[in-house]
Amino acid sequence: MEQTLVILKPSCVARGLMGEVIGRIEKRGITVIAMKMMQLDLNILREHYAHLVDKPFFPGLAASMMATPVVCMVLKGVDVVSVFREMVGVTNGRKAAPGTLRGDLCMSNQANIIHASDSVENAKIEIARFFKPEEICDYTPANISFIYGDGEY
Ligand code: UDP
Ligand code: MG
Image (cartoon, rainbow, N blue to C red; front, side, top):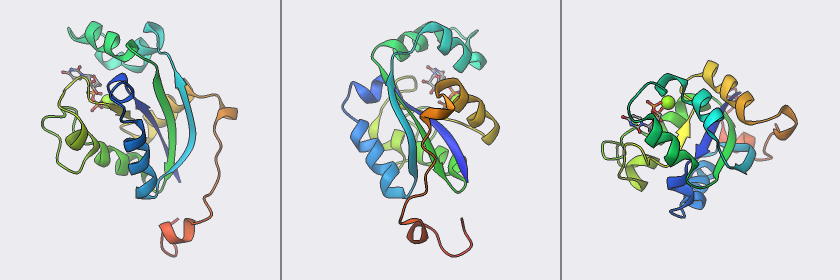
C-alpha cells in the first residue's frame, strides 16, 4: 500500500478545521499511521517548497506556513497518493471543485488549508523530511476487509 505526507496548514489549524479534515480522511477509509504537531521554520520550508523558492510569493507563503504550528500526518491506503490529491482539489481554493477539501473549506490560493504529496516518489522524500521511521505506526486497521474488496489490498 502507498503512503502520503499531509500537512494541515496554519489556515486549517487557526480556523478550527483540523477535526473536519481528519474526519473526512477517516470516513473515506484512509488510515492515519502518523500524526504530530510542529512549528515549521525557514530551513524546512525552503526544502519542502524548493520548487517555489524563487517565486515572488515565496516569502508570503513561508510566513503563512509559520504563522501557527501545523499538523503533519502520514496516510496509508491503496493508491492513496492520487486518491488524496483528488480529495484535496486544485491549488486555488476558489477554483477547487465542491466536494473537495479545498473546494468546501477554503477561499484562497495560498491559505488553502492542506498540503498533500503529489507523487509516490515525492511522498517518500516528504515523509522522510517530516518523520523519523520510529514515529510511523504502520498498522493495518481491523476493518480492512470492509474498506476494500477481495483482492484489492
Ligand atoms: N502557492 C501560492 N501562490 C501560488 C501558488 C502556490 O501561495 O501562486 C502556495 C499554496 O499554498 C500552495 C503551495 O504554494 O499550496 C505549494 O504550491 P503547489 O504548486 O505545490 O500547489 P499544491 O501542490 O499545494 O496544490
Ligand atoms: Mg505541491
